[in-house]
Image (cartoon, rainbow, N blue to C red; front, side, top):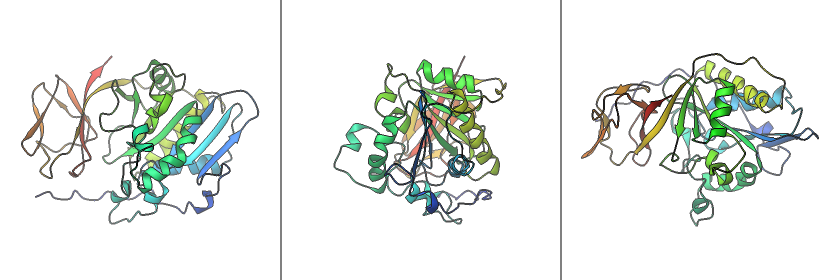
Length: 312
């Protein structure tokens, strides 16, 4: 029997987003500002998952403080507001999604397919917003209180931007995608080698920590500064650590269990047992095999763990 882990303190409280609904693009919760000067189109996307409040903090900060692009175009969007509005403090992890994971359905097969859900409907609404952006920052957070980190497809353009921005100082690089669906940052041309645009996820810390929201604001401003939309900012100087995603394990049975309690960034020797999933064994694929994003609770069909290896 699985025991529910204790609930963390909720240091970031959800706020009413209805004043941001109207926007100015004809799409709810999407705000676009054009400088009138040549430059890139940058999208800052929040609330891909409804309980990842740091994106809401960053997006409302940009809008409330009147951040405007000095060159190019800035778009700020709130994605899964429906899930966000389902939040209940006694079940804070349940508002991640209503039906589908909004960050796994960005393939043409799903967006053009016959299936429907609140998330698919919203992704179809946001599809032209994502496609129009040269560069995308998708702001996320983690269920466990671990070091913040970037996640991005293994394209030189993504690595160069993340390294130049400098924070977070940890990188999870995906050579073959997530292995569990298509995320926002790999939609359309952003998932191709020949595209010019940068697309990054920033995992800014534990969902409900105040400092996670504070970091999300800093990363959003750093991202905009990197592309020249706002004034330059001091560059973070922390040593960078990079990992390559080797395997994403999607939970198959309610009996999924780790061999020991994990929160993320623990290491295993090659062949060491990390978890079991019914009759299946999940074993480390290399020495110093590093666990990221271990599931807080086993939910069939959702990701159980990422296995990664350190890279230079």
